[in-house]
Length: 90
Image (cartoon, rainbow, N blue to C red; front, side, top):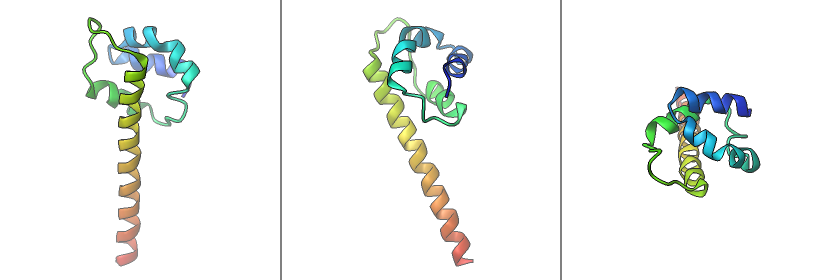
């Protein structure tokens, strides 16, 4: 996902301060490069309670996001396999 789209997501969810803090790390690490849906990032930001007053390291943020993204992908795959299984049984 491109940087402009990522910035808009952070701005829309009220976490622009996180984008400003980590934008360089997002770019260098490619954290959001494999994310194909904006809702994944948006849902992640809505699910976690980030506060501007508490310090947060990029490594921690990245770990939280990767766990969330992995869970999303796993659930998506399980739903796909279940649908395939159900289709073959019927």
